[in-house]
Image (cartoon, rainbow, N blue to C red; front, side, top):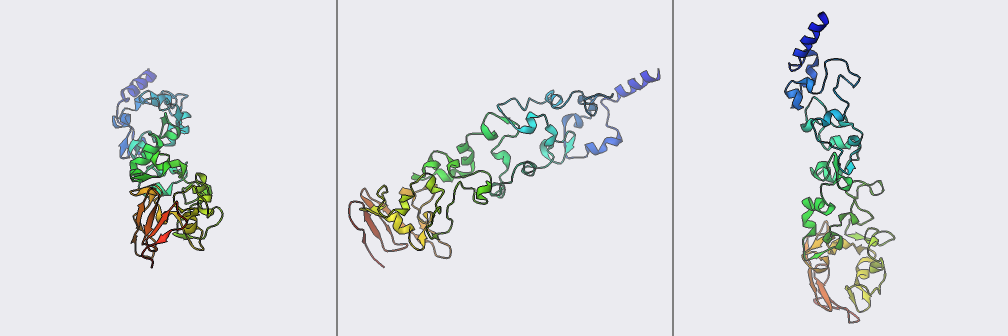
Length: 309
């Protein structure tokens, strides 16, 4: 008789407020719906059960009684695939939305390496990635180019566009996350950042992945429009004792002018100067930011200089 009365009393408590001993489970800002409704019986039984702390079913089956199957798509996040919901989520209450244990990106960084370049700009992991399962590799929310373009659309605007930028193949040159081989660079090869560098082996490792190094190492390289007759003018600019680097004259993504030419020369410690560049069917002209206006003609033996200073 006493046992029956105890059972009836416990049954009457199923939808009642939680006992004081559990108050610490209900002290957060965001609440699981059953907790907010003070209905512990949605997840828990009132008698001992071999499944965890009196749970009605093992996790994640218990979670999927209310939530959609988070592991249903082709690519599944490891904790989701192994049913470890509690790796990221608290189950009663939390100080963070979605009952997360910590805010994003701090939660992600617990397992994944930090990406300073994106986090530093306030970009969080979930801006590009899904978190449970996905139909795309790396849990991307869309095609890689669309993901990048949502923040970097300016890198694809201009009359002339670098082929990877035009085709949305950002990962041809960039890593989206740190790589231990190129710490701090986020590029897939070496690329000089300063306006002047002495040419040496591997200096343009990134560019050499697609372009023939003869473009800047062979003084008679003819597979370039920037030449006078057989004289390769790229070589003349780059291979000097203190040669110019690519980004002094070219925007590496897209530009208003042909040949990715910049409008202004911006060299640290110097006043910015307007770069006058014109493209002709037989050559072009450039100046006077670094020198007098120089015209190059691919069918002639030598360039001539106007307004030489």
